[in-house]
Image 1 (spheres, rainbow, N blue to C red):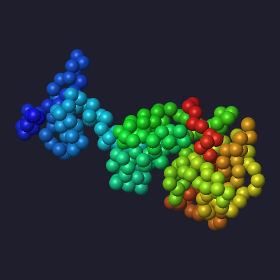
Image 2: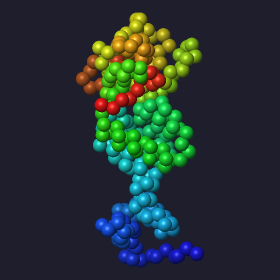
Image 3: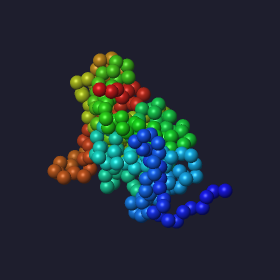
Image 4: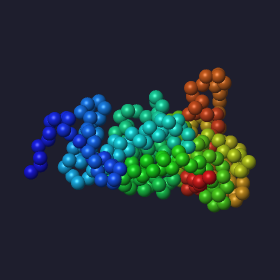
Length: 262
């Protein structure tokens, strides 16, 4: 039989790390405003199981969402991670399961990492994976490189989501039925790539843009395409469309490039 819940807030305590390695009693705040529903749930679970309070508190899905969100807010879109500005993500997507899939789609994971995330049946497992990846990406500068010769084309900070696209890495099908998973990049080192053919607007993956084939200048492997806006361009100093619909950008096939540490 479970013990009855004590109503006296002053007598409540939770387990924390003591200096001697033994869990010591810490007073539990009675105010829901400063403790929060999820912390209260973590406290309740710690009373019903042998698992200490701080484990539930730090490894609950909501706690991991908060950690990731705070990192993304302070990161401000650097290191190829999505920017959580006013319009970056809707509040309803912060629910742990929805958020884990939103991050799987919008953060520039490799194809193998994205498949691993989608195969995970546990929201907690996905969030732990995503949190580790976010911490690594914000700590180490990575580069987008050729998968064959490792020639560096750009920093991962240039990965972005084109306005209207589902994410920074999306899947497209051309008129011949070939499927391409493309990562979009604001800019690359054009001295390390070669252009093939003339710009063309036929069946462009991004309406309003022409495309031109790009290859690695060192090993000649196919990389993807350069996309350039066609028609009249907005030259005003304040252009709200410029951030997510730039005049030019690049789309490299995820299977032909790799992310490599600096």
